[in-house]
Length: 352
Image 1: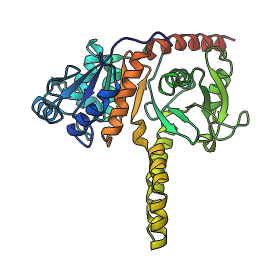
Image 2: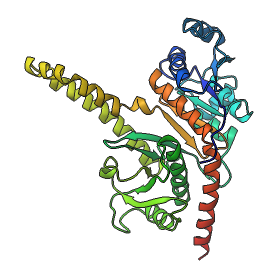
Image 3: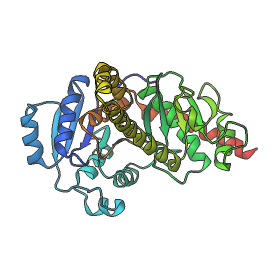
Image 4: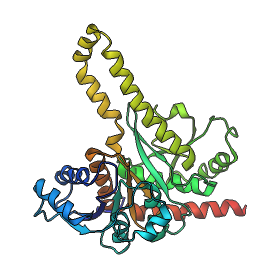
């Protein structure tokens, strides 16, 4: 990684998300102790509401937090392309515009996913050599974590897109997981050569030719390998990745309800639940999706973080931290260099 950048500014869409601006301000309060004193947070949204909430939280005079007034809000039900045309003074659009104008280094929103992706792509454009951006999300495992991408940005991927996902995921893992040489794998239905789809087979053929100095590609993995520490980065198309993401999140909440139901069925189990409460709290913390609330939209000429629409203050604070880490470690430039090398490899293979 390149030398750490001295300071960064994040543009936050304070009005997007299901829980409202108060949850965003609460996240800012939680974020401030962990960020560099030179870092800045710009809150885009209703000036009166944000001023009042910052005053309640004791941040009215903060030198690190500023309000950027906006008059419109993109709702979750708004159509993406139409919303960014008709609501140019929305908190979401203005946050993205701040990155484009160089007023901020990264934008973060819990708002409408389609609108965020459309606005980010139209305003910032893909970085040179990247055809489609990808959403990356972090999953916990018993031993460590892994990053899955694409988690939904590009459901109709071609082989070139998946190769780019592998490059972008590898570079992001160095930032998000602190790994020097992350293991990259391709998600399929069987590890035998030729068993996957044409998309998987053609992508695998390219990735195994990438020099180890550029990427640590470890090959094919199946779904049951996701949580056994087989890889640090798992590559797939956006259709598959979004299904994996939502199944895992649904399973987490299902298992939590199962455990609660079983532990409260009779007095003896209730006593056992009290005795093991500490262990269950620790397990809930380790696997809670809210710890990994920010999914970066990689491959753009600017840094963008998408948080869940239902994100609470902990999840939003996590997204803010990820945003600052991306800027401080110059993820965009590192990715650009490796994308260029990957494209040269794919061009040479196609000429053979």
